[in-house]
Image (cartoon, rainbow, N blue to C red; front, side, top):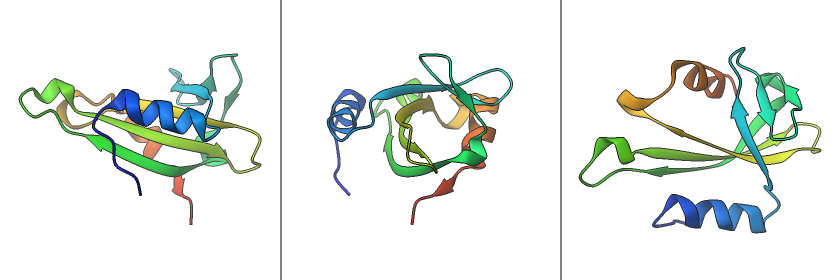
Length: 101
């Protein structure tokens, strides 16, 4: 797996590879795209994961997920903090995703 120095580099490379939709977790723990389509996390899988650790500041810790719907229609990117700054709803939703094999 390729490594990146910054979150922006990882996102730009993933977008070049077709992961073009910005995904986020809504308050009801569904994964939503910027156009408002929401799906159950069970319908997505993690394709790639990139973790960035802040050298001097724990608030710089971030993780980038390349996600794809199991039907192949949606490929997108989700980013979020991990560790003490992680959002509980986001962490819970991501934990339900399977890893692509």
